[in-house]
Length: 610
Image (tube, rainbow, N blue to C red; front, side, top):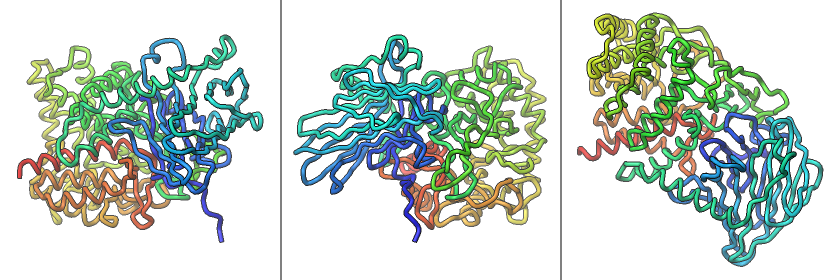
């Protein structure tokens, strides 16, 4: 009989973030993944990807007879875990602090754990096991007096402080067993500091009262931000949760939006479909800011637009499909062979080889985003218009070429119908912008190419025998990305072709009431071995499409089934295995959360019309 896996299910984790760093906290109170000071940098706690070598920070009851509950403090990303036993009850608050000290001297990123005694007394055990650079570096631990320690290794350093005693059990591990009684509070602060500052000025402990203030300010900050979410009705609370996740994946310094908080969580346990999603994809980010803007959170769209223009150096010809969260262009994919992977799923990858792929949809995404922003009264200035001109010209020039598509396949490029429609959208929105903003542009030429693209899609991207749109020109296979065509106004939601396409996708790509992206290997070879689960964004796209078509009962059924795949905190994965009833892929996934918002908005609007 095989030993049970020590790895918790992906659903067991909660996200905390300060819109720079990110960590995953298990339901038992263990931080098993943490990247600081930026979520696309090396981990300092990473046993999510190697239980023995990755490092962690655990805080759990010493008494095994304990019941645990968790939730987010209302309107925030501050995690509250309750430990309840016969002897007492305590509450643990986990967060990355957010305050104005980010703009002054002092630690830039601080992970704060606060334990409040509620009833009786609770015995707790703390282990701090930092491992830098994805578990490869065992740091140098030093004691600096009182309850302050530093962990240093290479260009990474942490300042670890508590208001109770710690023991250095070896050169690389800190431990403590302590008790909290009703009315008492204990604090654990883990802050990133530049290593040279430790040598020059030494770690500077923070007073208890200041840490308490940081916790309260962080709660206030999240509540103030989430209060702008505008969606009434039963879907409102869930939408607020998804909006908070998208904000958490946004880098407040640059405006970049990460696709997920993790790398290499497998699409199939034990398989090799393991990717690093901690970067900013143009596609995912455009969808994210659209969903946020639709519910009242508009500042993120402006910030991301600036990020893209800077990252492309203001030149459309230099545009990539993805960037590091600071605008880095070189995201070379490497495998970390020293890590065993989540549940033995290898390879563990850092970087992403898709960085240099050709994906034609990026042209349409950026022009479409600008069009939506213009409709809200924010028209492009002269500099951005020049950037857009080049984007639209690129769509006109390259639309007939094959690409890797929305799913960034690693097989041979194909003529994807969705990619062609995105080029059509770039031209269509470009013409509208030029006309409404009174800008000089080759509108006549763009209009001619736009009509050519439409004609090609309606003939080669359409199966007349079945009356449905298809994945690739001349093919017959389906693709869930075709559900996005009406949102681009290429075809109306209630067009007979779209109604048939929606029904065919819901039937042929079904995976136990959920939806797959496509059927690997049917016609298009994605260049990968193995299977993948149901792709959660696609199920939300189906719910949105059905709602916009007025088919409320079916839309509600699909929506509710898809929502049920999230955990009790409202966090959604990339994929899901309906047979094993478990989450798959990187987590939490921005693509799923903004698709949840879009579907919820569609359902709410339809309900209001009926």
